[in-house]
Image (tube, rainbow, N blue to C red; front, side, top):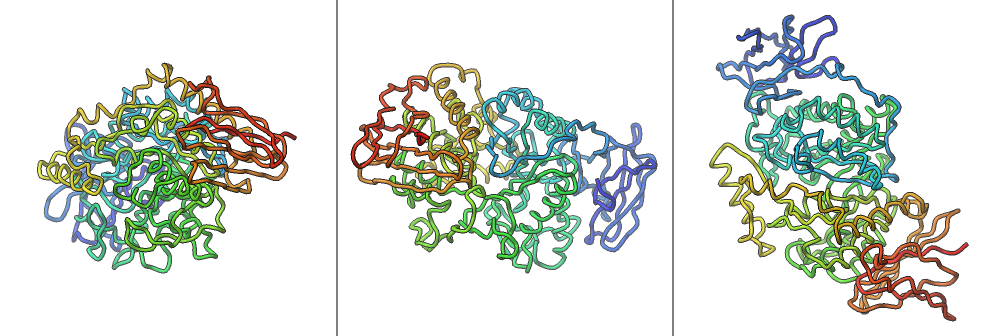
Length: 610
């Protein structure tokens, strides 16, 4: 923790300094636990901050702030809430942890294979330790980074993490601050980066005490989740500092390799220097100081290339952003769904467009939005765009949380895997995807306010009206909903699960060994025939053999032109090793060039013979 940081800082010569931004309070005290009792210490005003040094406090000491009217509140910058978000905070000494990752230097965007996971449902232990146990398997699979869904403290024990209210505290049920440090250290020693999912667009509805201290929120803008964070109104400078210090904390105190910024389209900032740009600058600077590569990956549904542009081109300097159009195009074609935002997609041509460029919508009219949508990304490298066929939103924000494996045939599921892992972008896998997990990932909470629980239940039903799912929504408050969402890795070695896992292993190995599959390294050409349902993706990279990936979306075999030259088959989703018939791998050479015969709902990768 750096000097001048808000919160509780353990001092080198003993004792603890408590510092809090609280312009809404005329006076403030800090009450610290001592033995079986508590001691109260008046705090000195320093501008809009209050400060106190307590000689008898140390790491582990519980404390609360006493407001002018006598109410007590946890610290807005608490590093630890051992008894929950409504209870006292506790002092943490970040320097006490014995890191063993001194040689770790991070992972570049072009080398990322992301694996998104939720700590509470990843293992039966529901803790960071449960993730640690599985790190060797993930590394062997070909994963290079785990993306951890938000762990900032939230009310109760069950939550996706996007209802966090104590942004600086690591959720205790997962293992608290020490547990997260052990996970990051173990990941680095296993050769895996850690990207932390953070939420800077809103604060959860229960346990949020920020209003008692300062104007953290504004009523000028509104988000789908409530009041917007105050990034550009009066007193916003200190709000921005609160956010930037938090971003630095994940890099400096927890050694995370980067941040995934949730829904930046719901961050309202009309100042001259956007907060997302400042977050990217802060994360990069912290990484440079530690001699590690650090990354910022933003989620936005605006198809806005400014997010990844450099500063000289009026950009926000993020290293990457999620590109939902790829997912929507693949999902709509394979499932036939056209409700909600899937109304803008469907047809092989849409998938071809998503392979050709990161955004399908680059300024044309969206039927779903009833307006023009997006802007071109032609000057941005494909390594800046993260794509998926499943993630927590696209699975969990279905009424029943059903995964792709329960919506399409096994052959289509393998076709989707090939589309993801042979695409020219950075791939993201959602936990369990690699072996075809069929258990749902449903929306769950454990709020204590009955009115809030009622509102959440009603809100979920209304949310799915556009998809026609409002009558199929599980109870978010029920513990059974949470239990249903826990992975069952015991099936991974059986039947079709084992065949799918073998395909993921093979495709991820090819991403490591074929230079043309490195995101941003290849010249991309895409041919498609919407009428007969095939796509050919060409990838050529200087000094490496060219590749041609062929995808057949039809129910019948298709003959797809590969072009001139001789070709070798590298992998086919229809291979017997992956539970197929083995009818692919047929190449016919005619006067016009090579033609590949591809099985129904199958994909195959070919390499130029040199």
